[in-house]
Image 1 (cartoon, rainbow, N blue to C red):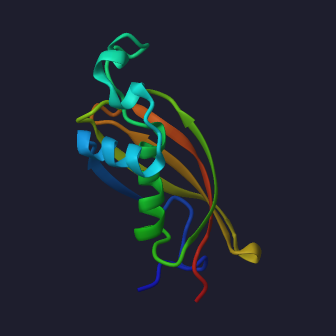
Image 2 (cartoon, rainbow, N blue to C red; image 1 turned 120 degrees about the vertical axis):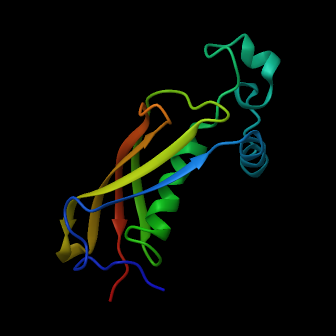
Length: 139
């Protein structure tokens, strides 16, 4: 299976992936990355912090963007070259995050696609936003 080539993509094309983030997801991510920040894994310590409870790792939420790019748009064979990202609001355990990508620029001569990337929660609040640079698969 191969994703869309630069010739098959168009400005405004978009795709999304939705996932409810569980406590297990956070602990697995913490174990994989080694990021055991108490803000994510220790409710007592987190309750004394800025958010007053544990929050999901920002990069866990952002990693859903990678899933959309690699499985949907452009899809399999795409190479993720870069990402500018801003963490706008916290994601809490049990939140449902919708990762959206939208084609905003095509550079066919370089086989490069620029995507606007946005993650929202179940309330429609933007929690992560940025821009991804992608090399779609070649035909």
